[in-house]
Image 1: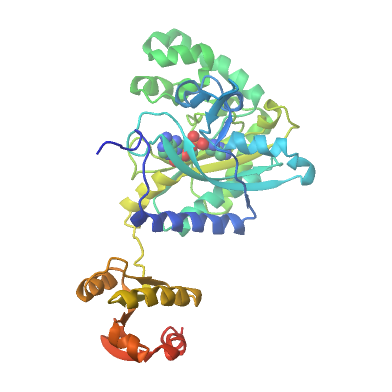
Image 2: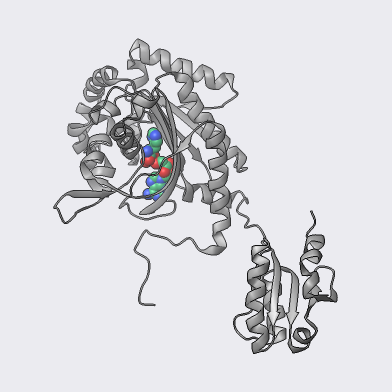
Length: 421
Ligand code: HAM
């Protein structure tokens, strides 16, 4: 085969689409129930948008973006995430003037040039939600409850909710100093990437997956112990609301997430069913992003869930079942005249709302019956010269194994009766 899909890009074939549709429709149903409205933003944005929001020193921006120059020599990026484009659209369209609180959801493909592995693709899909306009911890809780409810409706179990607060700018600046004091004498024990992180953004060191760095980090001072009073109160309130609503969680003081726009709440939902890429969902609060992008202060919180990873978990938990589809009617024409007539009948029956298919390959009766069985047809309408002469079909009711003649004029009333709920 000469042409293959680009590395890290995958087809979703028709036999798997049922589960995708189920996930998307369940997510949409719950977004709707929670009052979130859909947004669709372009697949391309100016590269600068992501550098400003996600942060220049993050892995996503420094290593993983698909960025190229367009004809006007502008630097353009295939969107690697949705929070920044949603905020850009919110600000550009002055949505804050229309209403003080906007609750928005999306389902979208995204692009990151990471090393492909299980659960890590270069094109992947997310559904997610962003609530813009309030800093109330109740809204953080709503976003978390919403994501958990979607997973629950899909039948997924054994998920873990990890929670942390990365504080506001002041708390973070204070903490960066404390962390640098701890790491400086140990720096030669950290990996090369962490040496760079020490200079650019020391907080990123806490996110390092290297085992020796991870061990050193275990003894590092905690950001949670350095939160301002207001941030600590916000975090306590959020935890109380979650407990009150019966949500189990684990506070993980090392959770800093791979994007720089977060303030206060950050969270991830993980599954043991996945390997090293165990997060099916990530999110948090980003109260300063609107201002960073030149807008009015707009506190906001959101989450995004990776659909491919969700499918892996559903597969591992035996929830990955394509539903058996049924065809209402298969028309089986034999001969040229029957074939012409069949196309009219297919059209007519489809217009009446019946899922109808026919043979297009001039197959033998036996082969057409095999095809009708493969398509799981409930009825087969046989149409040969004899039937045309008598202006009728020979109908096979497949489940009952009954065969009968049906005149053209009676088709509609027969079907109404047969498919009566
Ligand atoms: P994120 O943690 O980068 O956050 O991505 C969220 C989820 O997308 C991950 O937990 C994972 O399930 C999935 N994901 C990420 N990268 C890949 C990949 N290369 N292959 C497959 N799945 C992947 C964000 O994107 C933030 N915008 C979330 C957010 C919304 N924060 C606030 N609002």
